[in-house]
Amino acid sequence: MSTRPFLLTLCPLALSAALLAPSAHAASNLERAGDVLAVGIPALAYGSTYYMDDKTGRHQFYQALATNVATTYTLKTLVDKERPDGSDNDSFPSGHTALAFGGASFIHRRYGLEYSIPAYVGATFVGYSRIHADRHDATDVLAGAAIGGLTSFYVTPYEHGGLSVAPNIAPDYYGLIAHYEF
Image 1 (spheres, one colour):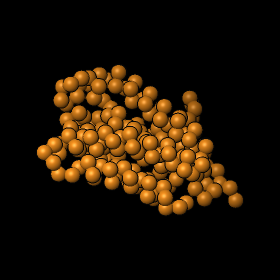
Image 2: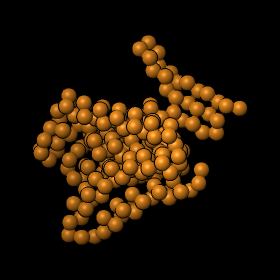
Image 3: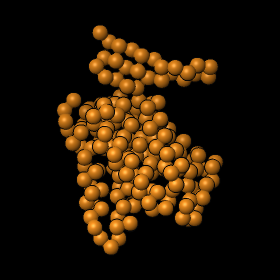
Image 4: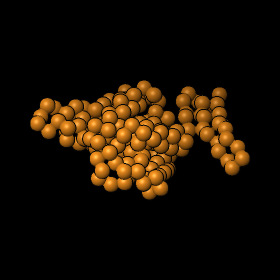
């Protein structure tokens, strides 16, 4: 792999740093930076499938994103938890964090840990920004991170150097499938 996907993951972080420049509206800048990264990280993951000419990865991204969004919004409807700022009852789980960690986890699974580290840092910042903006508490953010990470890990098998590992879940069986090409 070239270093370009790694360099591309730095773009969202650079954007958030620019948005966080000192100003009278630092709190709103922090929240805005989190909003940008929540969309930017999955957009970067999706764009990477085009850059790498990875049609299989693109299909896996669609599946992971759909599963992530469906799980997040089903839980928001079922749990009906009030936000810390009292604005509505859609606090659990954090959708922003779920999207950001879903994108970071997709990059990790599809292209390797070294490319995903900046995306994980950005996703962690998204979670922090949601708590700082009083839109979520730590439980909401941790649940969003878990949903995002697990949906990408479930849908996107690990493939590296001829080794492929994927979960296998059936009604009466839970396990892993490992395949190695010599």
